[in-house]
Amino acid sequence: GQNIDQPTEMTATEGAIVQINCTYQTSGFNGLFWYQQHAGEAPTFLSYNVLDGLEEKGRFSSFLSRSKGYSYLLLKELQMKDSASYLCAVRGRKGGSYIPTFGRGTSLIVHP
Amino acid sequence: DVKVTQSSRYLVKRTGEKVFLECVQDMDHENMFWYRQDPGLGLRLIYFSYDVKMKEKGDIPEGYSVSREKKERFSLILESASTNQTSMYLCASSQSGTGVGETQYFGPGTRLLVL
Image (cartoon, chains in turn blue, purple):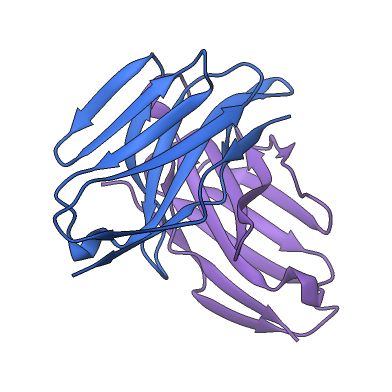
């Protein structure tokens, strides 16, 4: 089976940096995704990692260590609009298919 | 832009009713998924399909069935709705293959209330 763990809630100040961690256990690891979900809206894609290391995309970066079963999403220069839930999803083997399993999400609150 | 649409944003049904939730995607994606999202529990996979007429059970298939007669359409059926099926239902689609191409695109969700 798969187990994905991320903090339930985090708070941060506008302009600051925040790191959201995700640890996982899975069979047949085949990629890790981060999604952003604003309240009442659908999740939208933020980043993808399949090899170890850091992927940077503007204010957002995502890191992966496969040997440690660990990833983080780094958000820089926080803005109020970054207040949202951040979902970690790990693709692993289920039967004959590779499918993503989601963590419970981290609710990020950015305050002035 | 990928577009995933769901038939209803809000739905109210009575216990025992048969409920159909429809999802349509316009990007010729092979894979389609149905999730439910509940506070504190996150997104949980109900069923997925990787081709027309193909379906696989997810983590919580009990009380649900699905149908995929056409590539672009994936339906979720609640045979006899119960109050514990009150939830937000999200449909998603993705390409087949590996890597970032498997990014999922989500519909806006259907908030179902079963009375």
